[in-house]
Image (cartoon, rainbow over the protein chains, first blue to last red):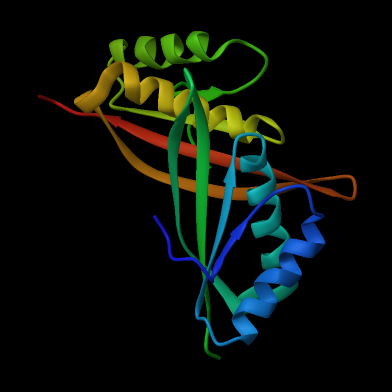
Length: 89
Length: 89
């Protein structure tokens, strides 16, 4: 689905931590960051996007949102990937 | 954001219930259904989409996913809207 180093996998850390991770990735020179959440962290991935957007305002734009699922045993686990691009102003 | 009658707001009912709601909306003649979840139901909205897709396979296509937030008190609540279109085969 997405490359590695610019992908943030949402887990138990705070939303602010993931926002900081995204900013650090942009500062490393990446133009795009992917925020990936699965299961109950799908909601949190959207939270992280919203917090990042509030922080950087027009400095970023939403490239797109993809949703999918993975099978784990007999259950389907929902996945979201939110791709964000840094705008050159 | 979206019109009323073809919007499914995800709450406490089962995923299967919401899949049935979507099928009923298509059967009423709507070509598009919007699956809307907020807060912890963002993940469940993706679950409903995946279950609907598994049920109807190529009978539907994903039009797009939008994410947003609403302010409630001082908190930002995440929102997702998943728009699905019935394919005429």
